[in-house]
Length: 350
Ligand code: 5AD
Ligand code: FES
Image (cartoon, rainbow, N blue to C red; front, top):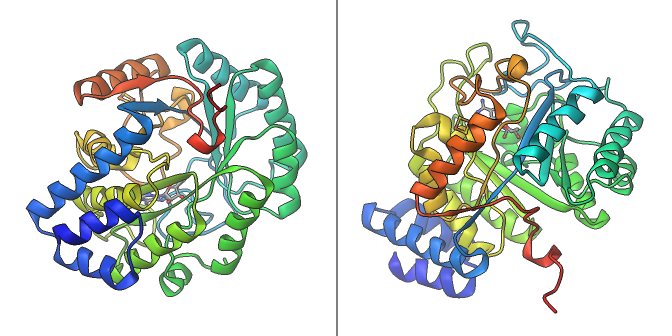
């Protein structure tokens, strides 16, 4: 297995068959070696810096019904909320004061937020602060809508592909189309966004064959960011009785993505931190280099319950920033509060 890891480390690519072989045969020792090689590539490209993104969860209304997700349309127990433009701007002001230079606006697919409203919010944030990046994470939209947000100043877009197994995708996403999701990702790239794709780990019936497809797909798409987190059941969803994904499997996926896409921006996700106390630290050591602390107002945090047991549901933004900074430092990394663009988007050194 070490040979396969070395091949991946040197070439940053590996055939489908070899990825599957690696996933099927990893033992404890090889896994540690995999993490070490992933960490080396991250150090080479981004040093030991961990980039901070301020996350603002601005609506938990959603027209979709993803079976794993706590804010799915059919969850009658979800306590729905929307932040006003003023609320969102205030979160950004607080975040800016705390040093954040990237704001991630995330929400369900909420038709209340028309293109005009999103454009207004994005352009207001961009005109208020001249040195911040705005990331949108609001689901599937038309090419034209993505274009409008981009023209309004949005820099990045996160849209996890969730799983590249078409069969699994269809079983989890009623009335959605796998093809459309993939097309959205290519549209976002074409427009010029820094694009984030990604998938969940440990979904019911997900196999190593499925992960292999996810990894090959990411290599093909060449996204700038990849969000990978464990599936965690949410009590009011059809998957409430299923098992969570594991920290170890998630970290293995993070490492392989770092080796396939050495320059990728790779969050140690909140879901990973929610599974175990040291989850995010493990994710960083396995090649992750981004964290996304919560900037949402404390009174809505519990309501953005995609899954159960989410961390930081009651903490002030300032508390979160301090807590996570300490964790990053004690894991041996350095906090970086800059915009933290992907290397290919950073200003050339002159
Ligand atoms: N467990 C883990 N992650 C989840 N997400 C949604 N529901 C869950 C869950 N139950 C993830 C999806 C989505 C992201 C915002 O949160 O991958 O893209
Ligand atoms: Fe929110 Fe630790 S990151 S309290």
